[in-house]
Image (cartoon, rainbow, N blue to C red):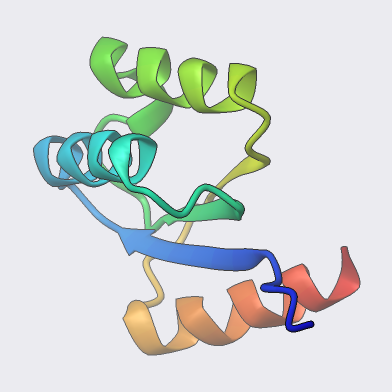
Length: 93
């Protein structure tokens, strides 16, 4: 019998709190729930975890047994480099 595995969702963001909030809410309500979320903030003006709505969604996802990891970069790197760094970090976990 085929068993579906856990999915790692990698999100790179910079100054997009509304979109991240919508994305996290959408993930919460989808049918497939076996996933972990890794968010890399590429030096947004205000860190995404300081947005009240996003913080509440992250806490809710954690209560629903999803592993949510937040990283914040001090120097803007761009999406391509962030994806590479995220993959390397996730492989070490």
